[in-house]
Length: 74
Image (cartoon, rainbow, N blue to C red; front, top):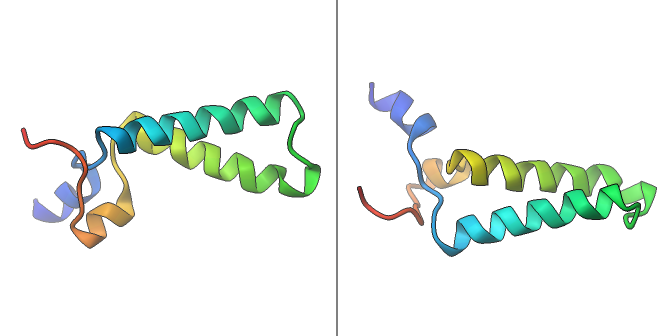
């Protein structure tokens, strides 16, 4: 099933993984403390969710579609 491998393979690692985790966490903290204006709260929430989700799953769909990976070889 080569098609399913594109949707499940790990392709995020190293500094990229750290940056996504940090940006997602900072977004959640900023939203929790009310530091983000209401007009931007959905945008910050969206990017925080995407950052944390891709860091936790270690998978980024655009990376898969472009054939790009920052994860080390297994």
